[in-house]
Image (cartoon, rainbow, N blue to C red; front, side, top):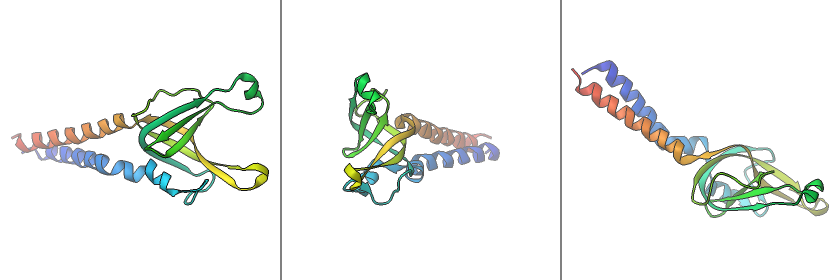
Length: 160
């Protein structure tokens, strides 16, 4: 048994296990949890400007494409992304994204708050403020780390 190889493999295995089991629950919020937090037009646990990383599966994508003269009046092109049948966020100043329905994604969002007509009431919505990436690729890296740690651990255990 090669203790150094075994120990290195075991550490990599534990790191991979942590990434597979605990990364998303610790460092991100599921889209379903954000959806459940909404009460009417506002989010109960969040304030304007709060940032969150969320993850889930895209269930709907729609876009608005305003003509140039409407953009001059303040209207913006927006991509509307629905995740996990309910939670939605906006991507401003875009008319398309590289993802499609069924893709598993993660996204860094910021809570935006707007006043309703004549200042009566308010509406809150999430807007993409950072990266949006493929969750499956990140998960693949986690599983490869786990498998690599297992292989190195076994190699260290059986090597004389």
